[in-house]
Length: 259
Ligand code: ATP
Image (cartoon, rainbow, N blue to C red; front, side):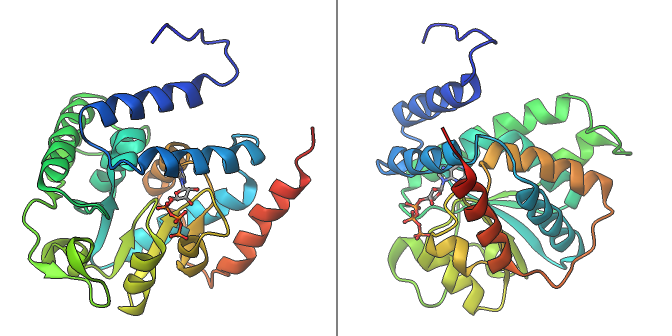
């Protein structure tokens, strides 16, 4: 793809598209990944492609719940790895939790491919600078992030087939699951298990957005970057979060958009 000048107003969006196109060509994404991304882009247009104040509050709540969890986990799919993998690895290193590749359309090839992409991203992250304000041995913290998903040995009750499997030392044993871009059925199944389910979804009306305990209505790479700042800061405390109010705020922001 030709170089996109920094001055291009939609550079980030075009680069994200290109990253997904290349990942799809490598066989890392399900066929429907582009449909999901296109749906997200449409909602992001209505948000002005920026993080709203209410999304910032939701990210803060997400950070707080991750920090107080006994067994948090970050569950990722292909789009999430491609768009936000580096920052989510940084978040996992700060929080001290594993990352599990968990796919709705699971194939061994895609899981293996995404795990090796995450491993490459972790090497880049480990050799880079620690997030500003974080103290400690950064390389050791990143190396200690377990990358799970290759050998699922557990299932999520209420789901059938390959989309039900998970790892017992990951999603299966977790009390809190950060799962950006989740499908509605699986989100509901995780909530039914009594887990705290924290999602990122640009569509405030998706079943996922409406079922989760905390929904961040924002683009996943922007949200992951702000989440990283919040977990490094470590000041947020869980509140009595009203998720429906957050979704209504997002809809109000979209409704105020004008030409
Ligand atoms: P549900 O099953 O929850 O009702 P759905 O059928 O739309 O929703 P998917 O097809 O899995 O679910 O779509 C994924 C969701 O992820 C969509 O709601 C889309 O808006 C959102 N999405 C796609 N790309 C991004 C992104 N980069 N950042 C945040 N959200 C995104």
